[in-house]
Image (cartoon, rainbow, N blue to C red):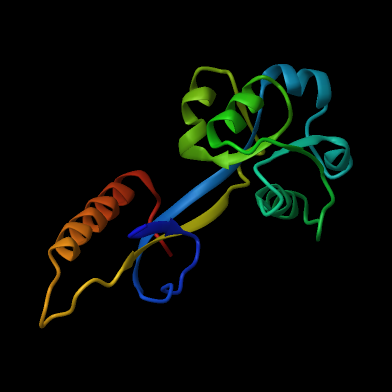
Length: 167
């Protein structure tokens, strides 16, 4: 691995870091799930009984979203684990539960009506950063460093197009 995208703001050891922008996360569910499980909507009274899709045990986006949406500290959720980014969105479309996912990833499903954004005013702004190894130095540049720099620059350019600006 010569580089990675991370939510960590500080440069990892041996790396330099470039801020990419903010990826907003939104809560979504299928219309069928909403009709079946949340006919009166998702709120402070029923979130604890509502299944939430979770990527893995370290994924706390759902708890962060519930905290922001309903002002609840350390919410306990019914979790259904789906450890694949694509399968996670498919599970939401299939009505397995509420997913908290990148707006960019779920937008096509929302546009075609397969998913509905719950509380659209509540968005989790997740800042992303590009970390890449420092290869070579000014006195002895490494050929791979210039290629890696070009990759990092292309990634930052694409991020400016796709993400919201960092604050």
